[in-house]
Image 1 (cartoon, rainbow, N blue to C red):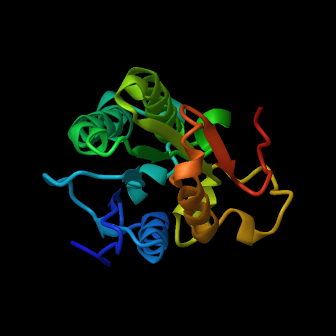
Image 2: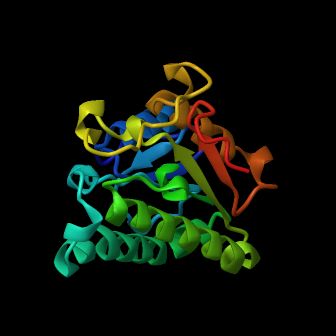
Length: 213
């Protein structure tokens, strides 16, 4: 996906992971909002940059005692490095528009999940990286926010999470409150001009399952 639409007012958004369910929903919503949406970093200035990358294999159950060094490097350390490199690439384009960076980081990072140790650790590392970027880049006029869906919203079939306890907490609200569409709605909200008072915050979109402070 090189472009979904051309924003009438010249606004541009990048969605990394636009081929995932959540990434595609976010890309469609931003396109409907009038952004020109791209999936790769280029030379053009960006009003919004969203990181919604999901490696399906990273959600496969892995017992802690059987997680060897190579597995941890692939499904934890590599994912943190990928975000680090992406943040470095989008800094200048987003700074040029004093824009907003959004990380999609499931709440499983905050509560942990049996069988998902490398993934949960990676996502929490990504979340802390985004919070640190928010502090460092505030002087550049850049806002950085974390949108935290229920991990179920990342997969096309919840049975992929069998063997974990990632779905142990029941949402207080219905499925429409934590699916890809709900995540896209919240991303749309936090990148709006009147949301620029926010930065560094983690906004759960999990239907009230975790209710983290």
